[in-house]
Amino acid sequence: MTTDLEALHSVLHNVAPNAPSAGHNQWHAVCEDERLAPERGVAALVDGQQIAVFRTYGGDVYALSNRDPFSGAYVLSRGIIGTRGDIPTVASPMHKEVFDLRTGECLDNPVIGVQAFGARVREGRIEVLVPGTTPPRQVDATGRGSDVAVS
Image 1 (cartoon, rainbow, N blue to C red):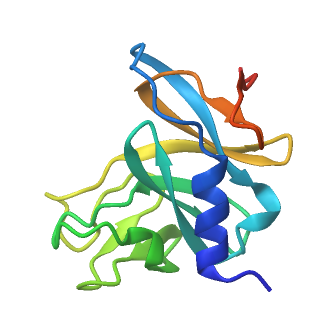
Image 2 (spheres, rainbow, N blue to C red; image 1 turned 180 degrees about the vertical axis):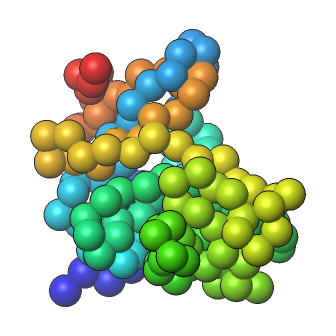
């Protein structure tokens, strides 16, 4: 069984090193699909941004900013996954405000929200779409990088 710390370690080490931004929307592979358990979230560092990636019980994946706007803490990946009606949600572990996983809107206070990112599973990996970032590079055990092909 994978612990949260192991999953976070895997996510952080599969993410490419930061590079100057080219200003393009880019899909970034953040972890192997099988590493993210249903009803769980993990944090990924993509181009200097902390992104919370979630999988619902139904297998859908979502990505939001990891920063809770009410507390300022980077904790949303540790939130409680659920639903409110038909809306997939995450409740912040700090003060339990509930956010729509599809849009980042706070359902308890619609004036506040978090940034939502596109998320998908492609070729066995979870990818997030981050605006204004550089193409990801995959680093092998020797520290050499190579471009990751995404479309």
